[in-house]
Image (cartoon, rainbow, N blue to C red):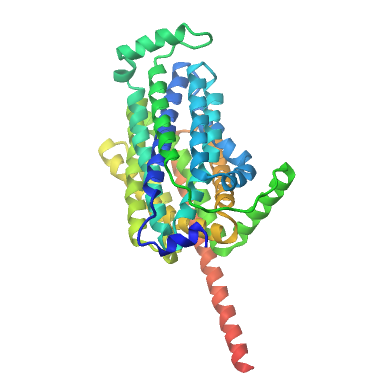
Length: 439
């Protein structure tokens, strides 16, 4: 009996689970704050506006390119230890920013660490927790992810605000770094040092997470074999009725979510005339909503009810045009909370369904790597489209209308396809039962 099976018998979430949540929270908190700080670095350096979404593009590229490798890597090592190592890689990316590397390149290094961190994190959850508590566990982890996004936006906004960058310690550190070879004079150096401390805390928490005990057969490391195995795993998950549906939904959701980070920042600047440090706090409103929705889903939605939450995706898409047409901050805040809440209600149950099917059909690490590949390919595509539209000077309001309606139509189409599949399966079952009675 593996760790996944042992979790079914437990009366509650297993020992070490909440430490895993805390470690994931700290690492994601630093990632989200670092994005705001790096955008501020681009502004400080006078980079064009469309470079900001390209930060996330470079960060996410590792998820797609390394997908065939990170699944077997996560299964080959104790996952908590691998998470600690990948936090160390993120630290190298922050140090590269301090040393004056181009922000796009340095942030891509952080993305490399995050790409291997993700399958280890989600795979460990699947190993530790049984199927009957997987929605609850996913509720916890999505709340931690989104809380980290919420507080990361707040922390990032604080770290780029004049209050923080104007501190005497920031000025002193700026003078010290300026004396080093190739280190630029930046008012954001103290902000980067503060984020190094958060990554260090995440690594310390990871070290204390117990081993789940799950072990997998050794696999080859030949690149061609890894790619073939990954392609086969990807095909297996897409062809499974429940796995393919949930994978399609989460792929759409996370592509939208990554792009929404930048859409909200641009919309806040263009429509509400807010500076970056205050616009970052609007991301927090979306994150608050996701926490509410994810918490509600984790408490009241069972794994067998996951597909009923697809309707929330349609509501999510239709809410975005309402936000786009709002020019009042007091009205925009509750609408952004609603956007997050319906997103959380949809993605947590379907993510749990996807993890369950992936663990049954593949292995924990490989299924998460397949999921990460598809979701982050969606992120790359949506960010590329968004950056291209910005480069063409498309106004933010019609852009938000387009994204929102496209999401609503896509989720509605998936609902229709699922209903037709269920109807065909029911009809086939009736025909088979009739034939058996006739015999």
